[in-house]
Image (tube, rainbow, N blue to C red):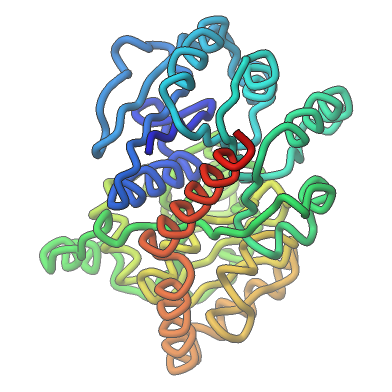
Length: 375
């Protein structure tokens, strides 16, 4: 079985949440004999087209970007060439250019779309894009939502619920080997006090500015792993308010991130807007058995972190509630430990790469079976 994944970005150009999901699906389904390829855009297509963990990352030339959307003339031909060899085309939404490529192709292969997020920020452009979007979703065979929470609150997924199924995001523990004792000792020496960990790209919807406000009175250190467009303003705020307990660590290798996850008191994820559709970093925290704090924004974050079971879920933007949740975990280690164990159990039951890959493989088989009956 040959599957072509199609999204605007992929390794080695970027490796964020959607890219990690594609990687986990490609790597996981390979155990069932699925041969995956990925097509995305790149400023350096020749240099960045290469093999990655058993599958090929193909690139088309990125011409320019507008409103978080990459455009390419070359991608139409590359898609046609690669999709002809595939048994199934697996789209990853949102990316409006993808819709155009699909609708202007002569594709007759089974199609599935993993629905990673609503379009939230570009509201004005969304009104212009909606007719194209609905043509795209009407034409594909199957849509995958990443959590029942998101499917229930997404206007788009509600419209297409007859063709929507739920497969959570998943991670492969093999990609997160335990940190060495030496590495943990180095981090423990650097940060001897209890600390809360945040991991993610520093974007507007991550709510890190809210976390910094809470840090002004917090009785623990706050470690921030990641880079992003909000970094200068966040650092300026921390400097202005002399937040000596806030530490910007930038992007770190996975081994260092693993060490910090293991050493942390808890994982805090203050995303306060619906642009945060799933929160793959929460899945990482659950995998390491860490108690979590997140916000109720009607998305998959509250599917990963269940209030009172795996951690605490607070009102978005509520600094008092966020501060109280952090204090609760600090003052009640037994409860924090119970949350962490429950999160670990939930990861094994729902979010392991093996379970997710098996679900996608069954879906692929179903699509091929349906297509053969029609054909």
